[in-house]
Amino acid sequence: MIDVNKVDFEKGGGLVPAIVQDAATRQVLMLGYMNREALEHTLATGGVTFWSRSRQSLWRKGETSGNTLQLETVRHDCDADALLVLVTPAGPTCHTGAVSCFGGGLGVGQIGQLWRRVERRAVERPVGSYTTELLDSGTDRCAQKVGEEGVEVVIAAKNDDDDALAGECADLVYHLLVLLAGRGLGLGPVLGVLEEREARSAASYETDVSEAAG
Image: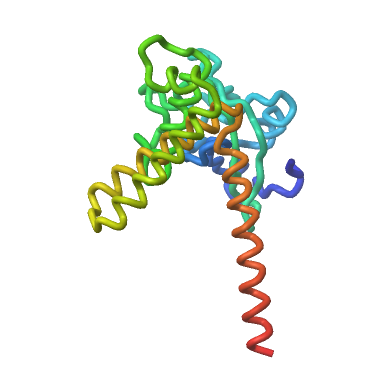
């Protein structure tokens, strides 16, 4: 996970910034600060804990609201003076009720918020929800909808209609998420594959550059 002894707490006067990111969607949720005790407590309990600079005490996220952050993994940056904390949130992270302290989904973060909504539908199955209807219809129907939306994307692209293409791509993304939820998967495995491919691509690029220089 992480070696606490390798984290440079001294540079920041005993504290390091901790960027909290949703492990499934990669959306940035909040920024907090940890001292050694807070990091050790987080690792020991699995409940993300910070050092409150205003109260000068440990603060476990969600201890009063119930909107906790379950630790998945934590790593430090290249200088070992900042942390990236990957979590599974239980409810909204921000005290305002927003998913993120940085506001609504930005860029691909919007896809993350859509996934969380689909994920809730898969658990709660509210009556009258189109997502519920799709999930109840089974994997074959969900997969069929992905195929249909894929065809719509192709048609919009061939018709040279940018607005229609954007709309059909949005529909395709939504139905892909529903299919993943129906199979009991999430964005995590997909993002993991993309990260592995990116790492291989970067390594291949570095090799090409090295060979060219040689």
